[in-house]
Length: 312
Image (tube, rainbow, N blue to C red; front, side, top):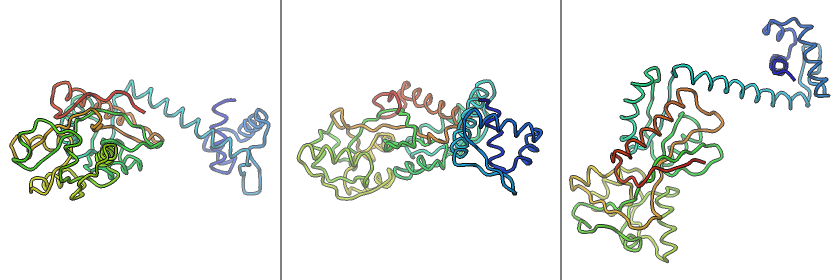
């Protein structure tokens, strides 16, 4: 079976005309008809049904058409990937990031790409939690950086870094503490994100294991809003360090680590499996992974526990 025969069959099926396909392919119509008869002979089925207006695909032909289109697309992607290794990647890449992690990653990423791949243009979109997950699944952006993405067969998920979780308190509150245990945390009036945010789920699970009910005085989605509510003395939060470390350094909030290994957040890079990435997208994805690794290695990622190894 020749890939050219399959490609030409796809042309005929799409155009529903042997003569139009022959014209576009610049192949004599009798030669094109012979190719189709040869393909039908190899498969032992009729692929096309001729009528006065042209041709239509048989049920068996529909099966072959679907597989042929997939094969041709795969071969095209192979060619693009190989070509991308030997040519300068260029194009536009849209990246969605959470505010705090994005504030650390994006400036370094832009500098790196400006030096190594100036032909790549970057559009950065800032979003939080569920909105980031939705952007990842929908494919509205090429790449999405998100904390603890929900597993999805539609997504490729590449963990980047694991971050410690901190109890964040109003200024002057809990400042004598060096850590919180899970049980001590459960007794605090908490301002937490709504379901299905990861930190809310994991805290509820830990409370259930200890037979304790969380004292949630308020739900708030978004780091900036939560910071403001805590600073106003309305409760305590559970967050990673990047959104609050500057405020904690200035004494405007207090951030105390939580003891134990089971409570951490994983920042991950995601994109849709089906659509894959362009050459520029692959360069940007690699640059994001390298940027995070370098920031952690230099001690410039507040609250980083370790690089998160592996992917799904």
